Length: 327
Image (tube, rainbow, N blue to C red):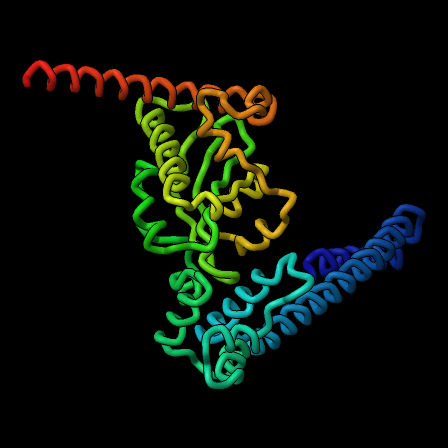
């Protein structure tokens, strides 16, 4: 019982005895006050008890519900990432969406159910099956198995000099070679290879086509120029394409968070900046528009290439003169 109620009860009894032995106004007031106080305390105590019962009832509901919360198994988590990969492949793909049946066919499986059961977490995929799925569609194994990284992350070591990627591009023999530029002051650039209609490879190294470079960055600008020139010289120019993307889209694509086709599928985005970049002496009729189209950083990058070409030419001339003198 509440101690306040006990004390007020004692006061009430005392006041009633006082009133009985010495009738008067003062003991009457004390008795009335004690009665009203007891009524107030009783109401408050009743509400408090009711609240405690409600809180206890809610807590019991939570406790009773807890056993029903089931933590997903590793197989279920892997299955959810299989489903996520299909979802990513169909983003923006309204006319010819991928299906489980189509993926199974591209994987050259004997039955659609082999893949469908994995998607529904009805069958645990072997590591060999996972590797086959990832190799077919360019998915990161680390992401699919462990949920680490991003779906299209490329774990391969990157190259400092863009020209060093030429041999890899030749080896991969892609359908298309995309030079992706960020529409920013820094002008970050990376290369994306389209290996098939459903498989892409991101070369996750960026170079700056702008004035935001030091000595190493200037060498990379020249390396990018030489890579593009070499691709054009060896009849790969028809495979090459370009995009200039807004920073948010650029970051998503570079990081491997989206299916590349969902970004590249819009022909209106095609941009020949990579070809214009090699026109360092302004021989194309449209060269007067470069600064307006691509910004001052682009013009600066072209000037870096010219300096490198002139330095190489001077070195070559000196070497030829020295060789002639030696003869």
